Image 1: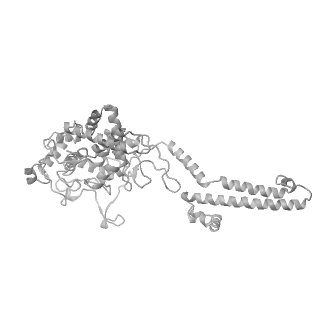
Image 2: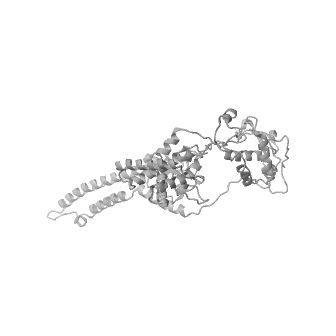
Length: 482
């Protein structure tokens, strides 16, 4: 309770017991220990009292055998005092604040679990009948409004297609400003909207946009490498009724997209950065696509759609993993909560928290959303290889892939390596590669046979196949789109 709302009695108690103000969920066990100590002292004092009362009662009743059982008849007052001390000690030991807190927390969690989820849609609305004023803010500070301005578009993009926004459209309940501007943006006459959308879709397919600064089409942005193509695609996009699926098909059917990524000396001399798209650029899988691909080929993916995000948490060593937090009074992880298959959902459904990026995604350049990400980075650094070699995630799903291979291919070793290669790469390996794979599995099986691993239920051949699966998942052929 705030200090200003405390009663005089509460203030007096706080002065008498100042440590009460510092009680927290994590420190309750300390107060339980104090209660145990007090109960122990009461027991010791009660024994001393009992000896004293027995001695006094024997002195007052000479010739009478006085025991603890007969004290109640011979000295009722003393017996009542001893019984009160005994009950007080029992009460102090039975009332555990930390245990009570866990009980109430469990009850609260049970009640919360029964509350139905209520969906919300964030929307910017206007109050009917009220026309909001718009100001120019001094140095961008919203607390320092300057001159009042009428609704309109940025003048730098309003030169060729001027737009007149209503101050207050009487035909609609609100001012109608945003509706009028939205219609202007999709009218097909705006110089940027269609070009920006087309450029971003092109970037997703080729790894680089026709304008390589997708978030900046202004003077400070990059010039388009193919301005005529950008204009033509934007015009086709608008003419098709803004059909994104048709635009995808148009790009994917093009000669530019169907090119090989093979490099030649002539192309490297003319266009070393491949800005003119003389060949297809090699692109690494995005972090989410990489995780999803591993889930898919291991046979673990949960393809369910919609619903709540898969939560993330910090494990015992500080790594961010999938899971629901279950902390004790000292804020330490306790019993793991079963996610019931939700951990196998696509990365699209993984909760995004700026302070808790999922470890397996962060290593492969998950986009940084502070405040937004207009262009994803793509790096090639040592931690990526180290994660593929040592990550619990990769090791677990390599074992899952090995189990799937054994189930689908049977006990034949050759069939197993063929199935593993097909699942990972979608094609059959060359004959000489099959020999190398079989030799690798044989050597690994022999090596694992010489090393006894405690509590390992997998046999050496199973561990060797899992090792092969991990090598396939770690190879450039799996990581890159060639």
